[in-house]
Image (cartoon, rainbow, N blue to C red; front, side):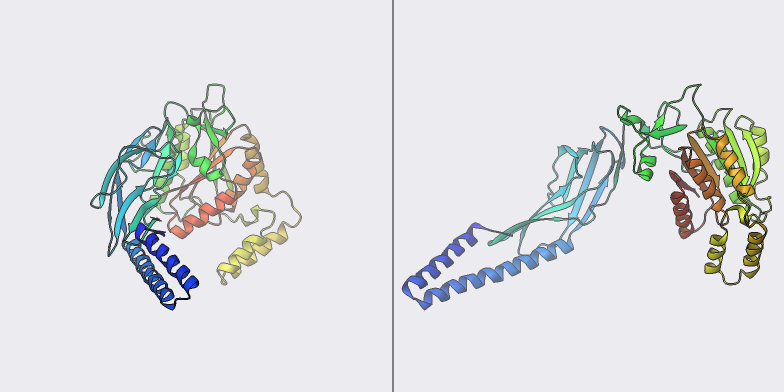
Length: 422
């Protein structure tokens, strides 16, 4: 809070009064100085209250012509505000995001509105800072930043060359036209492999979604005929999963095969829970479709002893359901039968599959996340030993809490990206 010229003159008068009282021992001069000081204190309180009420009554609305941007894009912004201004004179200015450059127009509000254009060269997400408010009266003036609705709208800027577009899963295979979230694609190149960013890489090749997940820069690699291809691990849903989810699952598999350009020679590993169902080449579309038709028909066999220490599963069951006595007994029986046997059949199977795929740098997992998903986390952990980038597509997970639970489990297991397919 800064004093105006009038307040400065009055403060000078106070000093004169106190000085005269000290020299001449005049009580009247002291009273005059204290009177002026009291007036200024009251006016300061009135000013502070009026400014606080103004800030609390301020509402901000911004509209932009685009929220998904590319480098050198021009964004047109229209902002409007309403505020209760009493006994004060106020001016308002929109505060643009950090690093943004004002191209045309003015950020100052006239009659509660302003229109301007700006450019944001900052890669990633950008937010408006708020509204700068300058208030004044006869005695004081102050400028504050009100951050109300500063996060709206959120602007996301991609480097030139990345299209924020989505694909239709299964569209090329003439399945159905249901829309699926697919990763953003880089125009004009294959998107089959990732690797950490090294100095000299083009910023256009950076995959910002994976970078955000890993908190480390990753680039998508161009491929030639001598390069590796991605591999896919398909976790077929067991019996009990609805037909609609099974169809969505199959569409996601076919859509991923098309949109990630697997070619004819990539390896597609089929599993169902802890069961290994075989490996198919990506070019054998008829065999892939035949296996996908088994979705929802596979009986979930008892493979609880697929890990070395099933006590963790038993503890999990006991925490969630006290009536699982039969299943707990079955776990104890399996533990007794397999005491000292290492590695288990499941562990040997996963190890062999991981060894088979050790030269692949991108593994895509597709699952309905049925059951405790420990089989999937084991695959993720084993494949991570070979330094590959792992993406998990989860089909048909219902509630928001379950989605978060599954996403957290796969992220902790080392997945670079986890996508929920509705």
